[in-house]
Length: 274
Ligand SMILES: [Zn+2]
Image 1: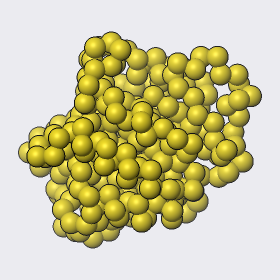
Image 2 (image 1 turned 135 degrees about the vertical axis):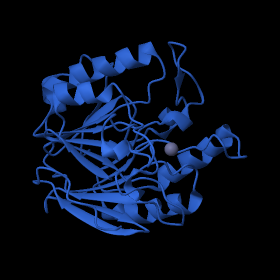
Image 3 (image 1 turned 180 degrees about the vertical axis):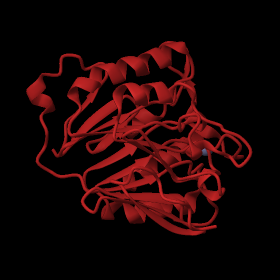
Image 4 (image 1 turned 90 degrees about the vertical axis):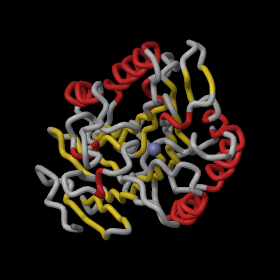
């Protein structure tokens, strides 16, 4: 087993059970908001073996599709079973993925736990991969879910390795990664959590337009934290971001072209695809 998974309920997890695995985490693929786009899901299945970690940052389902959500979720679970990165498949929920109520009576992606198998991390999980802690934040839809997420971050902060990566569906307010072209459409709570815990990366989605607008962005540096949002595009290949921790780069790939930045840079470079 290449990593140890624990949920926020696993308070009894002994420290030695959470020890850092020897396997280094190098290449991460980020996509989000595939919204039941089957050709794009096919592409992720094909691409996954080339990466150590594949992150789908939410909105797997599409609430506006004529296909019922329950049927979509069955298809998605099959797709997830076919995605085989070398270390971990990471699945966060988005607002389109809420198919029922959780134990607190708040809307949640109650189908997503059916994707659990070795090598898959979902809402509420953290995995240690080499020197990196990856925390999967659920889409929260009420005060109980928000409080649970705050507990999750507080409990996991002492376990952070050299690097901490959050998966969180909605980019923070005030960031160009949530600029729609007309307005700032970001999460108003996330910025304070970033300021408090300073994760190295926040991998997001939710707002489809930012990378495709001149004043928007697929990358933003907030203090020491990189926030990434690949955006959503049409066609068989999803807009996606490749993070290469060994090369120290992140590259956005899209139908508009590609852009690369150095993770050591103090800020995202000017856009080049316009
Ligand atoms: Zn979406």
